[in-house]
Length: 233
Ligand code: ADP
Ligand code: MG
Image (cartoon, rainbow, N blue to C red; front, side):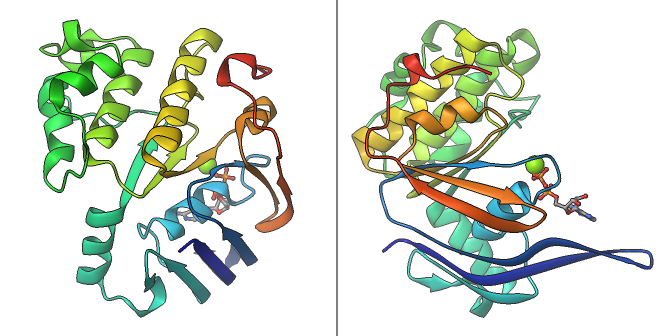
């Protein structure tokens, strides 16, 4: 079914100044791919991910995803779209501080389509022994694994990750990349990864480069490598 972004434009108004976060973005992402989005800070990466995931609106153009045209949905329909089809992973994990790891993962369970149960998921992300801990009791890598577990239990068609390894060291980051690859390979989910790390492009099927609100390049990668072998930079 693919994701189809056509001529999308988004402008933020900052006082007198118009900031063109997306100028004329077009791209097609086939299903079941790992796609990385690279580009300097401020180039529009997060804005692109947020409009695709329906957490931000846009001014012009069209986004087709999961059988919907997002520009045709009202707020209620957008919420439903996100609930059914989208998972987000952020650099800062976004776990609920007052809930344990297991309770945080439960949040993703409402519309679960995962063949894995809670215990299998906790094992998969290596957090079985930490399931009763609170986020403040965990390292960054552990918090991110809990966030991925929350997405794993929901098992959305589209997993949108905004710098998921940005706060992590190399070993911990590669551990997270392995989990994202698992989601893609085992469940055939589409995984979009925004990153500053060029090397992560080596494990992707497709690499998108952005500059000043535009998609300047899309490369297909015939031979994505194992996360372990990604050049960390
Ligand atoms: P990236 O993720 O590549 O760093 P962003 O998509 O976050 O870039 O931002 C693109 C541009 O839009 C930047 O110039 C940024 O300052 C601006 N921008 C992003 N969000 C907002 C906002 N909520 N209000 C005003 N400007 C914004
Ligand atoms: Mg960003």
